[in-house]
Length: 365
Image (tube, rainbow, N blue to C red; front, side, top):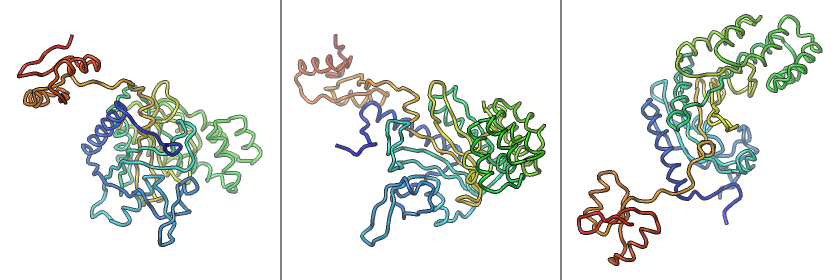
């Protein structure tokens, strides 16, 4: 018996998970992101955004601890504890996170594996472009050559709503209908709140979805100076990434209090959940930071990897020949007995095509 929301990973799934992890680790390393390891146990912080969903434990000292539920805040704690000598600094991390409430979207999972990067100590279009391009390269390394990255600009929505000067409850109501892309309800609220000359621009936000031409449409709207600066920033990011297939969703209004610049998620065909996500969150957990995380369970689901385990190419009685074959890159399993008849039966039942005996390879019919 194992706890609900956890599971075993058998061959070949466990091996494939490891291979995907190695691809991401090598990719991030090649871009200058140094690996850090973060503790799975943390001091419980009721202000944490996932505090209510975290697993809590009580230490022998009486302190309340929590299993790690999020890597970004854990990394922010690391940066505070060990301030980097030079900025910017690039970190990568990997490991499990746990949530007390199971995720109904993915088979009631409560233990997740995430890989991620954070570019800390710089806030610029160049930095955002680097993180977006690395996200795209991560998708390609995992085999999602046709995946698309949707880029939102929560700062544009926030700055536009703040420039209207409504009370917080009305601003929040507008945010929610913008995020749901409910244009009739949005029009009704804008009229009820007597928003004025910025109403047409706010009403246009849910429709600002598509290719890079969306940016030109957004520039034609009546915007506050801060909102114009947000668009200029995004345009500079896009200029640096002519080769990356990005979709813009300028009506995305998720977590306006967290993301201070871009926010993005990646999708692939015939799989409705995001494979990775991230964005810029200056001043939220760190003074300046941008990053993303990849969910390994979702990647495995989306790849629909084969369920059958691969078998070795050779069953070896000759141990010296086994070493030679492994040096050539072949998968070789050692014999456990000298009974060749038993070994041939075993190889036949497993689908192993060759036996290495006395310096030669014998085919199994």
